[in-house]
Length: 457
Image (cartoon, rainbow, N blue to C red; front, side):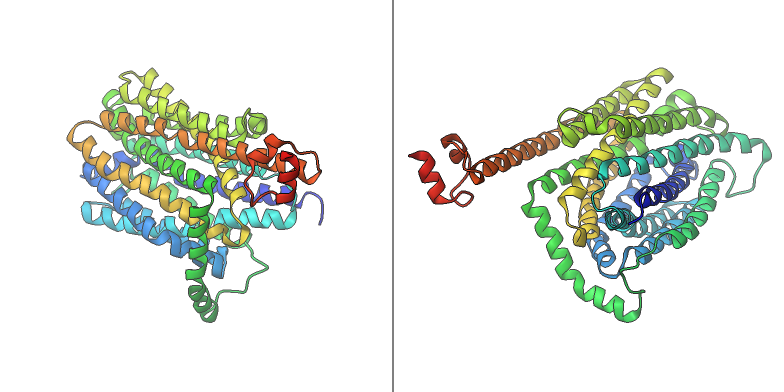
């Protein structure tokens, strides 16, 4: 193995992931305003997001199993094509029907994406540098994604106001120009993925390979579900994933309508949304850099860092929900996205450590399925609540639920501490230096009976 190959892989993958995040972020500061500006109300937007989330939930496990069976590269490329099509439809959205078509394409693309690219990167890194610590590499990718989000949020938020005097034709008029810019970048990302992601250990997809892959999927998915059932860390990570999905879509859906009550809601007013979107990008970048620099030294490890971050995130959502000034909105949104960045890397590190390589894609799909269920809860009932009452109340309730979910990471921390204690005891009895207190910590299936009897005597 040549020195530095893992670092080179991380640099290339980080650049690709950052560019993909740029494409995602370009329309995000004005996405909800684009949809409501085309005649959709918040309830209809919530319905579209619910359809997307439920479709992801239906397809997550099959697509994750397919990625494990036939390879991550073809699944990743298909994912990007469906997502590209979804935003092309959204650019031309005119009512509920086109919004649902967007949601269908987006749901298929999201389901395909979740178990492919990250799984390829983690396994390829493990092949090049088997002993490489995972968290620093994931943090480097997260920093690149944060930079892409920062650039995309700033550019996407400014484009509508810059283009407003030009009188662009429909569908580029208004907020549509930001979506068009994101589409152009997505095309670049697709060709870049085609060039970068190679799988030397897998056969090229063919009809026979696809049939074999589909036939193998029940066993793969069964293994993934058994892992989720039998591994306490994975179970609690899934609880946290559901809360994170609820928090993410609540913020993305409601922050713009809330901010519009303070900043205005026309394309000419988009500078304020550019500022908030840029602030969110800066916060994500700052959080990612903080994790890369200090994450491994955080007291309590990954579980403690992720738990504190989720607590901050929920508190910031409450702050944003009750703020009536631009300063309060900026503070709330900034903390939300800083905490998002500081929770993602430790959460993902815990997940990747807990799953075997052969089932990584399918387990990531189980994880994304649960994440999508959280999205469905936020998009459906909370979307209806926001339309019936106010987005502020809906975001406030989502913030409370996010704070309550911090208990999942506390449970993971306790589980890890107990496992470490058991390992230490087992090591002592293997060395012949155990005590009666050690014996009582372990059940009879874990300790040789003669050793336990000897200690008790």
